[in-house]
Amino acid sequence: MNFVEPIRDRKKITQVRYLLRGQGRFRDLLLFVVGINTALRISDLLDLQITHFLDDQGKIQQRFWTKEKKPGKRQEVVINESIREILEEYLAAYPGIGEKAENFVFFNPKNNQKWATYFPFIVSGVSSQSREVPTIRSLSKSHAQTQPVG
Image (cartoon, rainbow, N blue to C red; front, side):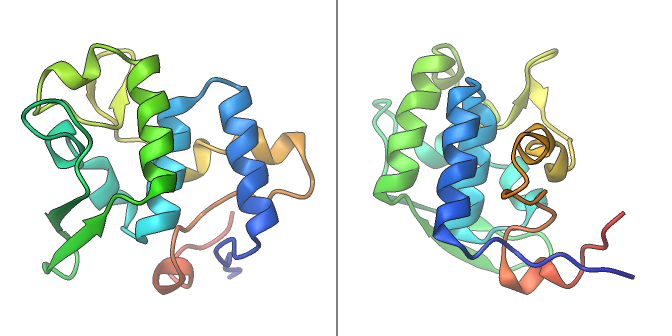
């Protein structure tokens, strides 16, 4: 069984970001950036709601707490400048998403419900456009060994 390592090369991370942004895939771009910067599991990322990122006045928070599913522990997530920049683009691209605090950040555009897609499909189009960018199966070092290829 083959395993995929996470992307560690900053050049490749930047390349994925530019491609997703260029395709106007702001939801996917935000998912990628939040995943890379927080090392949360995909199941935890998909559970994030607007209330995690925005305060009661609709301003981007500096940090939030979330309870991870698998280890069951609480983790503080810092919203760094990279996440903040993409989040602002995301909110501009989906203006109605910030209206309700309980809206899922990573929603299915067909039904506005929680998005239940497995992450590699997000960047499958990216990897087919450039041989330099691998398909992503994992977002963090600790999870890389659990994701089989193929």
